[in-house]
Amino acid sequence: DRLLDAAAKGGRAVAGVEPTLEAVNRGAVQQLYLAPEFERAGAVCDRCAALQAPAGGHCRFCAGATHPTELGEAMMGRVLASGGSVGVVQRHAGLGGHDGVGAILRYAA
Image (cartoon, rainbow, N blue to C red; front, side, top):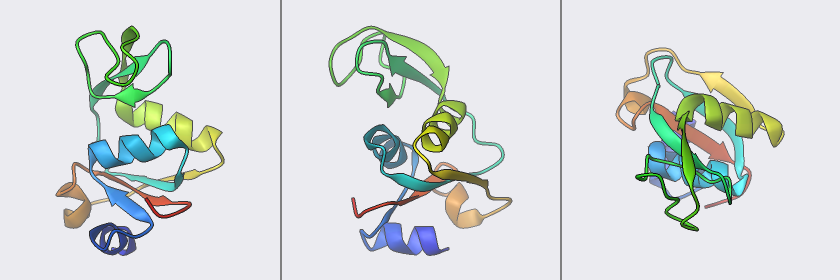
């Protein structure tokens, strides 16, 4: 609930796949929250390492080549590697309405 409230107010949180990916790519995530059923196909850039939605084989940021990845696992790995933590949220309607993913940030977006 705290995450969704802060995200709605433009504070230190984001909700939904795209805003969460952007925060993970910036290394800004303090706490990542995922619904247990979250599983999303994605891509990682071979050049800049950006996580993103599948982009037809080319990075939307640097036009480098990409390869497929599962975004939930990739985001968890990045957050843990940057010193953040990961939580799985069971049956939360609010988070479910935001693609089942969100994050508390280290600093405001």
